[in-house]
Length: 119
Length: 187
Image (cartoon, rainbow over all chains, first blue to last red; front, side, top):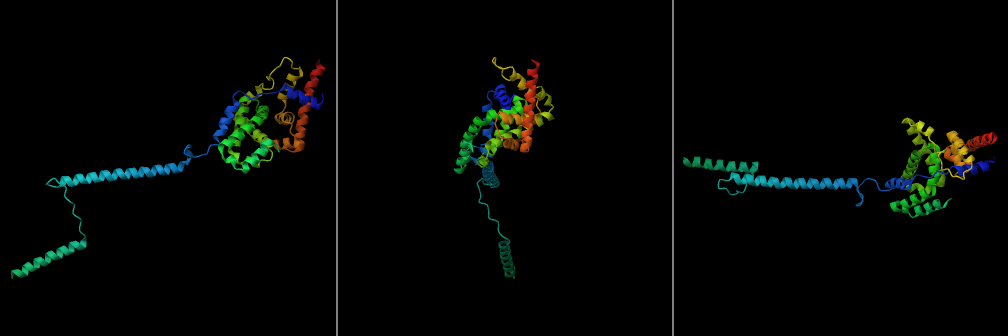
């Protein structure tokens, strides 16, 4: 039998067909590889790291805001409870060291003047 | 250069391949043109329809990952069959490691081909003879007979010299002829 006859016989005798549904399975899987990688929200097309960055920033702002609000409330409560009249007193500005020395000198001067004045 | 290669080149020039929907259309087209041949080749290597499908899927997954490089491929057919060979052998190695190699040896993919009432008596014989061929000879035979590749193309796919590719094909055909002639003599 000639080679060509054998080739022809072989082509005729073995004609395997791909299984049913193979096209959808193969192409669906392959199409997944075409989608951009690293997107947390593909529809928005933002990279994952940007979404995380913005999220963390917003969280920090929120936490600081809550912290500020609770601190102001706590301070207001303290000021209210410390006043005998029950009304809020304006907190005195703490004086500096220089200012306290001047005060002291003034007091000493007045005292010394009183003493000298007594004699 | 085939029409798909020309189309790939023109698409790449417009950078349309950067768009997933265009790459999908190209993948569909490549699948429709080559899938049957690739599946047949994978089946000849793996002897298992499930493994052959897995191997074909792997090829198209890699093709999708390399979609932006498709335009640089000169011979898409050789590229696909080389990839197919690598994928099929990879599946065989996995099967060997998992101890399923006997399944392949017992597979009847060549013998259980569709039988038509008008089928000549040589057809089952030639399928049986093909099933008994060594893997390397069966590969060369399938690529030559079914894909009508040149020996140069077969050598590129198999990673051997042209002479080796031709020799494997010749040995395969000789064994098929002997199987048929034995039957003729026995009548």
